[in-house]
Structures are given as C-alpha cells and as structure tokens.
Length: 439
Image (tube, rainbow, N blue to C red; front, side, top):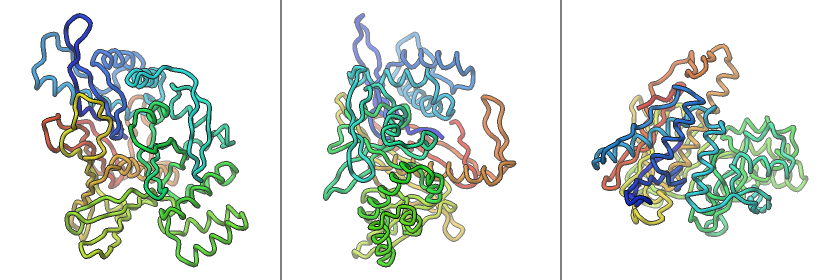
C-alpha cells in the first residue's frame, strides 16, 4: 500500500550560477523527511528505471523554459504522487538504489554525517537500552542490532518495529509514528523537534492471535509480556477486576505464558491507543479516545453533558478513509518540520444500510491510517493462508489477482498548495480485498 508521502511546501533558492532552483520539502507521516531538488529525484528515477524498467509510475517531465506558477504547482503534485506510488512495490522498497538515495538525502537535509553513534532504544517495559549504530543505519538495520542484543530470533523481526514515542504528562506514552524500514532512526529523532521523544521498540501487529507465532522464542515472549504489562498499567488494555486479580497473581508467579493467554481475553489487548482528540460524533466538538486493533476501531466519546458513550466500528463495516491536511503551513521559509497540528481523518462506515462519515481531528492521523492499513494486511494474509488457491501469483511486474470479491479503491494522496485550505491527502478502501489504483 502507498506510504504517507506529501510535499506541502516548496521554496525557491539561488544556485551557484546566479539562477534559482526549487527545493521541495518532503514529509512522511506528517514529519519532515528530507528536502530535495527536482534534478536529484530525476536522476534517482533514471537509476530505478534501469533496475525495474517500465513498472515505475510516471515521472514529471523536464521543462526547459521558465515555469509558470501553475506549472510549478502541477510539478509539485506530480512529484508527490510519484513518491506515493513508487513505494507500492515491496521489491523496490528493499532495493539498494531506493534505500541508498533516501539515506543520503535524509543525512544531507539535516547536515548529519555518517559516523558511529550511540542510540537509546526504549523497551516495552520503559527501560532504555543503548546500542552502537551508524547515523546512516536504517530502521531495518537498527532493529537487527537491537534484536541481536536481546536475543530475538531473526525470523521474528517482522512482528516488531521501531517507533517514535513521546513521553507526555504523568509519564504516559504517546506513539507518534512507526519508522519506515528505510528511515534513519538517529536522523528522525534529531530532526523531529518533538520534546521528550525516543525511539522505541514495540510489537507491530494488531491481531492478538499472532502472539502464538512468537511463543517459541524466549526474547519475543519477554517483549510482548513487558508490553502487555505496560499497556494494562497505562490504561490501553482494560481488564475487569477479576481479570486484573488473576493477571497480578500470574505476574507474581512469573508465568508469562498464562499471563499472555489471559491478556488476550482483556478488552483492547494488543490495540494502539491514540491521544485524546475531538470528533464530530454524535455532534461536532465531542472529545474522543480511540483504541485501534483486533479488527475494529473502538471509540470512547465524551458527550456535551460529560457522559461517555462507547462506539465500536468493526473493520467489516468500514468502506474507506482519508487523511486531510487542514489549513496552510506557517513559517514556510523556516524549519517547519511537522504537519501534525492540522490533521483530520475521516472514515466511511455502514449503519442500517446507509453510508456515513465519522470525522476525527487528531495529530496522530497518519499513525491511525497506518494502523488501519496494518489490520487490512493482516486480514489479507490470514485469508491467503486459509485459502491459498484463491491467490494467483502474478507475473513479474504485475499486480496480484485476488479471486475474492473486491471493492473499487481510490487513493487520494496529495496536499493542496500553500494558499489552499482543505485537501484530501490519503484514502484507502477496506471492504473486500483492497486494491490500490493510480490517479
């Protein structure tokens, strides 16, 4: 599925020959990822094309005369779409030509040289572990270093991920984003401008039944056990009083296996909880706390009279969603590195045979979108495992064909220019088996 790349800002800069060039600010998941020129992206596209041929998305053409404002905006939108679409192919994401270019532009953007460095990684129980890395190491590489140090089986790395995690009031944790495999954790941490932020290790699956895949690895069990305790203590998972007493007894006994078995019966176990935000349900301005996982979106809404209402949206009822950037960036020529303050996520769901929209205003809109995508991918993987004959392996360079009912999917993945107010940034469909289409 497409990644949350956008280019909301471009700036004119003087070059060494007295002319001017355009510098594009590329954001990933709402945080500044890099700044690049068209010529850099053009050379990168040529390198990718030599490796992958014509399966790449179209790249915006060169202009040999001065561009008008409308032409410049059109090129910015086209570059944005290119970055979103080029990340669809997992083989491309793992290729050296893809990763090495993005490593270089991340380092150059924030003037960080490739060197040895120490990085503190937050473990699920709140302890920090220092690892020796290179500033140019990707999240995938840093995860390998961490897993080696704690004894995590290499074949289980896909069940875990590195995240940017912020400490909030009263010691509560806020997950800001999952780091993409090609991101540089050292650079992302230094450039995020988020206070009290660390790189943290957490499990990265939202289907609690997948715990069973990890039970033969002692290190993996330790990690998900520590995270279960932290989630219960932090209020992310909500055991009943009877469940809490049993869990405390099992914790005292050190019986991790039984503890995790009982935890899977706890409400919201294995879910990601978002920070308090606002929504338009049942009326605009209501407070909301979301828990996402176990194939559902659970929302605790605070009503105007201070009563609370719990609403659950199974993913089978969700048709699509979209992230929207509201308003314009401030300080366009400055070091603005986050879009988080002006984000909306809305999803369409069915209720009594009618489609309705549920709108959320949250700085974690991109994280929420990533979680929804994760639940879809897990559901598709489970379907494929249960019905392998339903999946037709495609020829190289072509899409997979799924012999299950599909719903049409559109992907709206662009941001408005600086003077605009509202623009759809990302959309993904959920009903049936999602399939992404180009614009």
